[in-house]
Length: 150
Image (cartoon, rainbow, N blue to C red; front, side):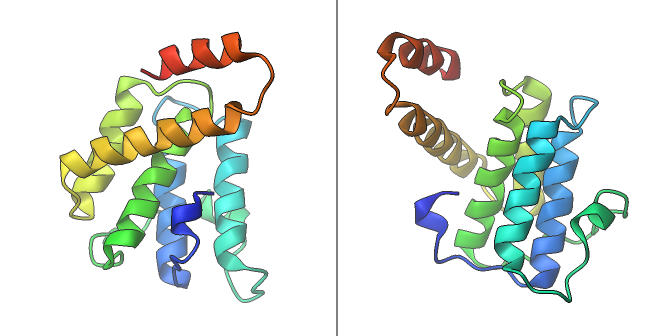
């Protein structure tokens, strides 16, 4: 999703835990929207890279999430990718609400990430989303979205 994370890889346990964390973020507002689930499914499939021996994505939506995420994401780039993807999922339904941001901050704390790094990743996610829109011919709409993102 983010070019700067192209070289970051996760093993099966990390990917399953990350996917369950993303599903947890998607459910913070009471529902998992189709956009959120689709984005999480894309993340899982990209990490899985067509491996056949991984759990089915559908099974991860019903299983109990992994309890010890802190020890799984040992590299800073892995933690960055997880938190940035959590932020993207939180935005997938159109808005990042306070409860979602608090849940992302909780995940970051669980994996040993400083709150200041979450703020930096939030800015990165906003920039990334705006960059995707910048190619659109309707500059006024892009400006409106930029204001809404903060």
